[in-house]
Each structure stands twice: as C-alpha cells, then as structure tokens.
Amino acid sequence: MGRKAAVLLSWVLIFSVWLTGFPERILAEEGELITAPHGVLMEASTGKIIYEKDMDTRVKPASITKIMTLLLIFDELEKGNLHMEDQVVTSAYAKSMGGSQVFLEEGEKQSVETMIKCIVIASGNDASVAMAEHIAGSESEFVKRMNERAAGLGMENTHFEDCCGLTESDNHYTSAHDVAKMSRELVTKYPKILEYSSVWMENITHVTDKGSSEFGLTNTNKLVRSYDGCVGLKTGSTSVAKYCVSAVARRNGITLISVVMTAPDYKVRFKDAAAMLNLGFGSCKLYTDENTKSPGTVQIKGGVLEEISCSYKEKFCYLDTKGANTDSIQKKIHMKKTAEAPVKKGEKAGRADYYLDGKKIGSVDLVFDRNVKKAKYRDYLEKICKIFLQGREKNISEKK
Image (cartoon, rainbow, N blue to C red; front, side, top):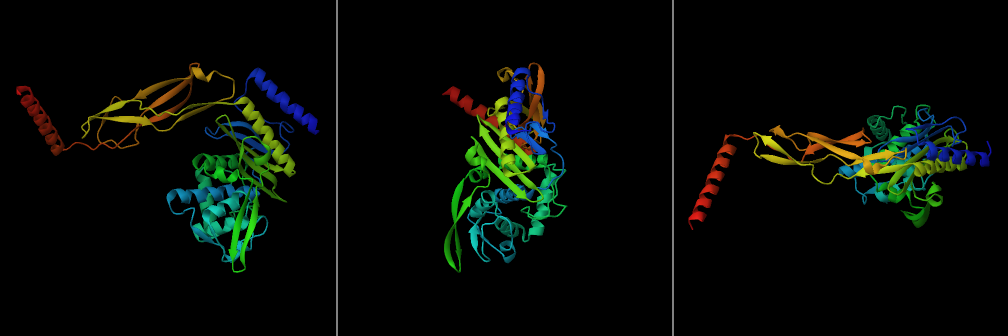
C-alpha cells in the first residue's frame, strides 16, 4: 500500500467514526491504519483500549525495556529509599555496555536525576545498569524485581532478562499491550517522568580523573519535536526487535499512549504512532469527576465518636468514544447509614454509581475518613461526665 493510499484510508476510517460512532475497540486488519504488525492505543486515566492490532503477541522490546527500569527507579524514590540528589557510581560492568550509551567512565559519579535523564532521553544502557546496581546490588537482582513488578501489573506476555533491552535472549520479551500497561503505570503514578521524557536536548557533565567534559543528550523520540502534545516516552530498536516506540501525548485534558512494535524502520514507527494518536484525539472525550466534596457522614454505633465523614476513594473518569452527551451523566450515592465500631480509615462505606442514558458506566468506592475505636466503660463514663458538666454550666448560666 502506497503512502497516499494509507493516508486516505486513515481519513476514511476517522470520517466513518464521525458518521457512525466509535466502537468500543477498533480491531485492525493487515494494512489498516498502521503498517507495523503490532500496535495499541490506550487512554491513560481509564486504561481503555481504543485501537489495537495484534497487541498480545510476544515480541522483542529492545530499549522499551527501560520503561520498567524507570518505573522501579521512581518506586524507590516514592518509598524514600532513593533521592534525586543521591550519587550513583558507575561500575566497570555498567561502563562495558554497548549499544546506545552516554559513555560513563568506571568510577564516575552522577546524580540519580542525571541518570534518569540519560536513560529516558538518550536511552543510555550504561546508565540503566548503573542504576540497577545502585538500587538492587546487581543487575540480576534488579531484573527479578522487574519481573515481579510486571506480574503485579498483569503483564502476562512479558519476561525480562536485563534492565536495558540489549540482550538477544529469546527469554526477553513483551507485547504491545504489556508495554502500554507499564507505560500507563509510569506516567499516571509518576507524571514527573514526563518532565524528563519531553526534553529534546540537554547537556550533562562528565567529571572523571581525566577532567571535566560536556556531553549532549538528544531525545531518541522524534515525536517530541514533531507531534503536537507529545511528552514522551521511550523508543527502542535492535536488529531483532526492529523499531518500536511508546509515545505519550496530551491534548485537551486527555493523555494517550500509542505503542508500536516491530516496525520495519524508524519512520514507520513514528508515522504509525502518530496515526493512532490522531485517531484517538479526533474521537475521544474524557469525563472526569474529581470527587472533592464529602458524600456525607455515617452514624457510628458503639464507638468513641458518634459519626464520621466519608470521602471518595478516587476520582471518576469515563472515556467516551461514541459522541455521547457526557453532560447528562448522573451520580447516585449508596452509603451506609450506620456502622458498628471499630471502624478503620479507608474501609468501604458505600459506593457512587455513574449512569449515562440509564446505563451504568462505572462506580467509585466511598471510604471512611478516620479510625474509630470501640467505646469502653471509661469512654462511656467520660461521656456521661461531659454531659453532666455541660448541663451544670448551662444551669449556672441561666440563673445568672
């Protein structure tokens, strides 16, 4: 299929969506919309898949592997086990990495923040291994954690053998769908990564026994410069994996993740990623209820408090792909009137259901805002005394 025919087909597809409404998920046929054999388009806040093409087939991930490496780094930052200003020492093994690198020297020290930039902007294999060793002691131990994290995200078609994707092992694989899953986890849980992945060019400073020198980092994701709203995330390529990309873009409050795997060349991976993003931004509308106000209070029986307030566990997001009027979405609260003490903060107190045109489209749990202990004899005695003293003060005040 020629370039003009492919572009025409893409516009025909988008126009047909506008006329007939968007299906829950578009399933691609060979040659439809994207050229690469594997791809998926996901909306980040809901995880909803908008478009897919053979997304669950196991393929080589190349440097897209580093998305999981970055996820583990930010996990450690959140736990407080790691800090941006911490100094990371490059080992001889990390220095020996081939492929894309930032040419770290053995014994060279760089901050965690600089290492993150080296990984996400320039895809440094040496920086990835140095960070893996710094966090877990060895790359092999770090890889174990990568596989555990992948399992926790339901990445059923993924197994890692290294932290950077340089390996040619047949036991190192993932899928377009799994790449979207780990990309979503990274950008929604740690949006700060997008501050780094959206950088086009930046210099770092090498300080070694040989002296000080500047080194330029250039983003491997050309969409950051050429596609409106693109803020990341990661590219990859080897002779076996061919060309892949996980592209993240934001427009009008919507964040989309466009994953392309095993594209025949770098131009196709970017063209395909952009085609899916265009389809998504042209067809999607996101409804969000921040749920900041309390849904009400619950009476507590047998507790040290008589009532406590509740809150929404999370905000509610709904992605419309059919042109529905999201202004007509209704919320119905179902909450306990009473609860027996003890009550724990975060326990479920009810739920909020959301409806569109009479059809339930989702729900959010309601939770207790604080702990309430079961009242003991002393608590009841203190309560009686308090009531007595308040009554006495009232009588004295009235006599005056």
